[in-house]
Length: 281
Length: 57
Image (cartoon, rainbow over the protein chains, first blue to last red):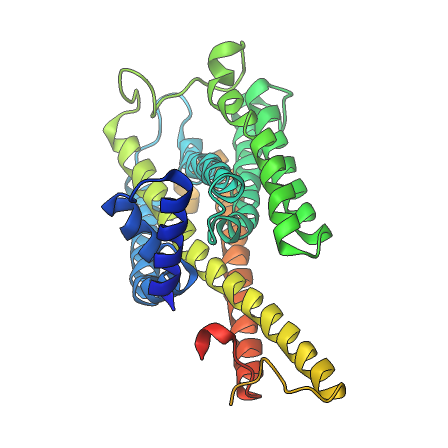
């Protein structure tokens, strides 16, 4: 089934562009279809889950035990090890959703809207962790739980966009229509991503400027940077694992909807004395 | 000296932040696994009734 779908999409690409698809595109079509995805993830999921558990165990040990106190922030720097990776993942998730929105609207890829729907609650979770842990860090450091600072406000807006996207998915029953509406909202909301990233450079903010992903390299001492990167890896692995689980669940739900539709069709056909169309022989 | 004592006046903030992160990530894991299990069970139940998609035949 997977190979035939891949061939079909490769042929569609050939017809629409008038050219033979590149080998890389053919390989992508072969893997990136629901059946290929299910086969690949059955093998990947246990490995990813194990890697996530190991990365979190090492990351937490380094964050709470081996990392030294910061010369300015003192012990409160340990909050950074859960706060900063959450911020990175909140942005990365939205960037992935933007790519999926383009995949839905432009390329009509069969997995793009599945990925978008799976990612939104994860992005909302990471944004919530970022906001709350940032607030907890802000109280002893800035003396305030919240400031209407450009960085904080733009991350709050990101969280609200995530909630809006989740609500829109739930508000529209037909998956195709919902995917198109959500894709448009996602693309509109993408304007917030560079605003979050560069808010600390464009405006005078209480939030400190970028200290890891910046031109000229990180400004953090390796003894604090290493646990931060290990926790970042742990969050990334968790995100990948949960994406696979949620995308698998979404594909199953779509299959259930199609099966129920066939069952309803069969019931109608049987009622009118015709031969059932969807039931297996 | 325990870690909590070592963190001094910041200890309640550090514990709260790690609790919030842990509980939120835990909730994300539980809801994802639950969603996956529910979908798989429903699908198996439908397939046990003999329903199949045309692609499968």
